[in-house]
Length: 283
Image (cartoon, rainbow, N blue to C red; front, side, top):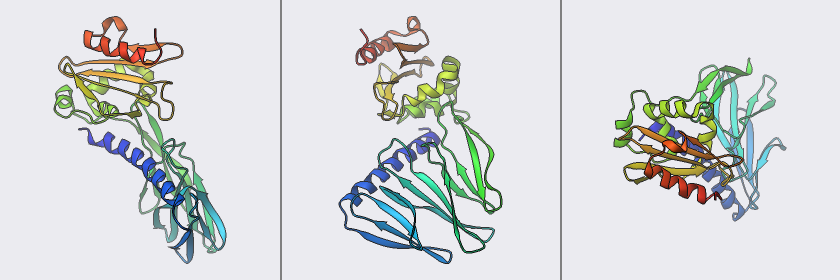
């Protein structure tokens, strides 16, 4: 199983689940407070017991949401730094991040990190925080660093890449547990890029919510949908490792798109495609 992409996908799914569970638990809990040390300050995390949490310092509210918590803490150039996470539950978006630091005058400054619904992993280096974005198939995202001296700056770009050296035989030996994991295979990813071109990222988005691929006539078959938009841009992928063949389709407006053209689809793939279309209103 391609571990890198599966781990990244799993992290996003688990983040949404944990945020949702945190909101659900807080909705049935009694009000409580917890002190969080931060340099010479003390943050107070309060759970209202009514599905809402907030963090204050010196009586000033910093953040409020269904779920709030500490993502990471660090000391950079003798500056105390903390990153808070807050989310509204569900898996539509990952938690928002808020960077806090204590300045030379012992005052807390804050800076929201705009992750556009994709919460990055926060890594701590000697001289900065590094916000490592999740990138899906066909995606490319900016890599950003934050330090007390420079603030938040762009330091590079992260592109999706499959696992080097993986081929069709690898895929047959280690089937994907989620359709997005198919693209971690170098041979399959190369074929997908050739067929999809600039449509790759949008097609992969349509597999965001999906179950484990099933095996039928030696073909791995899976379909999915855009999270919180099922029935809008659903995607279908069929992989035949033995014949080194890939079939893909996606809802469009109107109708459907196919890679390759429908006339080139195998008998097995065509039957699956017919059900996929009928279940989405095609006549």
